[in-house]
Length: 61
Image (cartoon, rainbow, N blue to C red):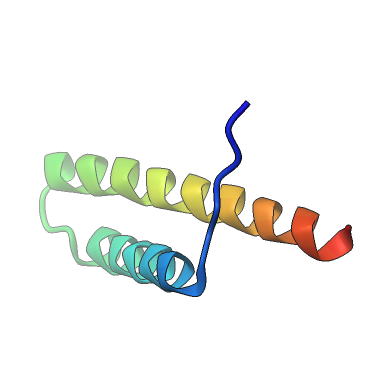
């Protein structure tokens, strides 16, 4: 199993992508655009949760 090494640059990049996704969903004007952006948002949120879980594992040990 490969371990993901996450530095602060990667962390901030993921946070930026997450915030962009949140903004994109709120600014969608068309149902199809909204659906697409919600998918992007969920993907970003999922990565953010994985990242936070990964960081929490390392802080605990």
